[in-house]
Image (cartoon, rainbow, N blue to C red; front, side, top):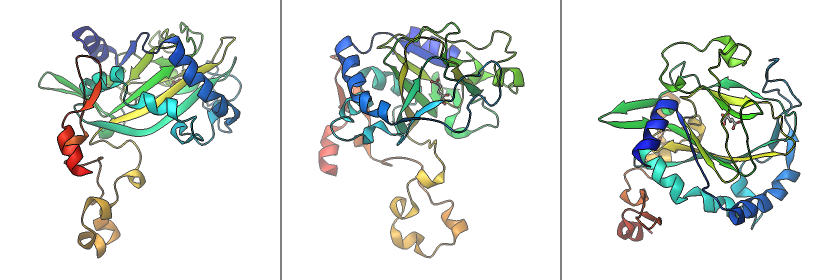
Length: 296
Ligand SMILES: O=C(O)CCC(=O)C(=O)O
């Protein structure tokens, strides 16, 4: 991630990186998605929540949610995206040196006239696990979503990902007209993201949502929800259990209240071998491969 991208990311709260996947790679993921398309259902609860501006046919979602769990070998192309060098090099700057997949990959699918989703992630109430901060000349974001785009997303009001640039630094409550996109005074943008591009956004810190899809072709986006290593974007049920984080005898006799402070927030706590880096030749590798060997 160069200084130009860092400036854009810090200023806006999102970043589009062009042409990360070539046509063969796009085709491979689209092929794997065929089976997921069969599992796409209409959502019962509307994401547009009565908004005139976001109105459309109901939202479409993939049942089963996690594409890594597709029957073998359909999950493999998604696995290949998990630690992609173009993602790792940027997450190191956005989330700090350590990060992990918190949830996903999930499939955002839309056909012509699929409804939008109200703007959310306004930074209020403050949620530390997805907050955006600066310190010592570095930025830190607890939750970064990486969206792989498999079809063209022309933006400019034609639907799909929408965001309020700069909102991750706003100190004021989001007006209702922004939430439902009816009166946003031009604050919501709908960026152009082409097939093969990757979008990063400060999910939870930056205000974002979805505009109704107006294009004649399907929207196909794969969202991978990363978190800084010490953040957890899911509730406590998805944290490391007290018995795993601590030795079993330490927590065995504890009351529910005592246990409530004993959950672990992070993956691989204290393990140096879990940090990734990108070499000059573009390869992703563990920073300390020798300690990874010791750990296995
Ligand atoms: O990609 C989009 O349309 C927005 C996704 C979104 O709002 C989310 O993941 O929270």
